[in-house]
Image (cartoon, rainbow, N blue to C red; front, side, top):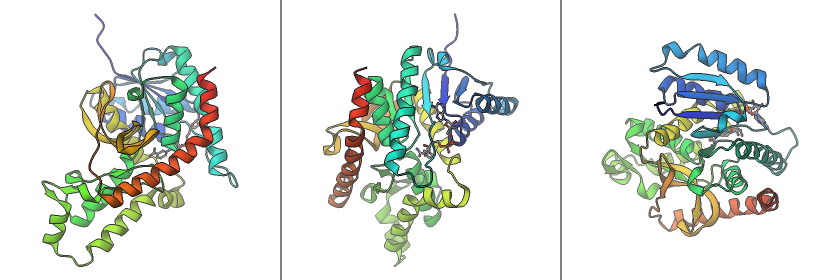
Amino acid sequence: MQERINKVVVIGAGAVGCSYAFAMVNQAVAEEIILIDKNEKKAEGEAMDLGHGVPFSPSSTIIRNGTYADCQNADLVVISAGLPQKPGETRLDLLDKNIKVFKFIVQNLLDAGFSGIILVASNPVDILTYAAFKVSGFPPERVIGSGTVLDSARFKYMLGQYLEVDARNVHAIIIGEHGDTELPVWSQASVGVESLDKVLRRRGDPNDREVLESIFNSVRGAAYEIIARKGATYYAIGLCLTRITRAIFNNENSILPVSCYLTGQYGQSDIYMGVPAVVSRSGIREIIEIDLNETEALQFAQSADVLHESIRSIRASVELIKNR
Ligand code: NAD
């Protein structure tokens, strides 16, 4: 009997796709990783380079370049393909072009008979995940966006630095759009086994509130700051995608703020947004509705308004593919 292996296909072997593949090899999360890129030579070169590191991986991983035929028996497809914004191009123009790329990719996945989970990283992630969901006709639990997992990681890291505790002991999340309207859920933040409020009271720093506000501003502006310095962000998202993949492949039931399709939760419907959800082998097992205070609920609704606006602008093109 052939043993069950975890196979992932990465579509878009750019900086994000390859950082993800590198983290996957390092952490030995999958037995087989296939890279696909419209630039076939690049995918081949990246697979060769990554493969040469396999002797140092905790366990053996097959890594190679491939074609859409490889998706047929894949468990997971991670989409990190995208076109960069050109000077003078609006975000809407870029969105329009990336929707076309996504239609092409999903059409190829369907033609290959892919029946696993789609995990989207390309930006704007909530909108492109929505498009992948509509175009594929897959159940929503099998179409997931990386959501605010990265933003929440940045948040934990920066709070951990300020509070001088291990970032992994900071339980605080960012929800909403992966973008300018995202929001921190201060009301539910905790450190170790204490509420953040209690920890702050004990520290007695009179500038706490301003510092926390500036930490959130740094989280929200992190991508801009990194892009201004090095042109792109990719290592941390590679690790976030690896974390989500591990939750899926190991059936961990881990709670992660991924982009999920909402059907009434948080008062929102027909939209993908970053909210805490239980991630398991079948994808999104359950969306968790945490209590938000009045300010947070209002900010969440405003974030949803912005995403609904973008969805309206693409609805015609995603419906069109659905009815092909
Ligand atoms: P990149 O330009 O380095 O890589 C993109 C790759 O996609 C290129 O290799 C390109 O050839 C390939 N590609 C384009 N069209 C394709 C198609 N039709 N089929 C297959 N491959 C195709 O860009 P990057 O830095 O790797 O970023 C990729 C995406 O990830 C961007 O949309 C970026 O905004 C996004 N991103 C998301 C997060 C997040 O938190 N979700 C974080 C960082 C970056």
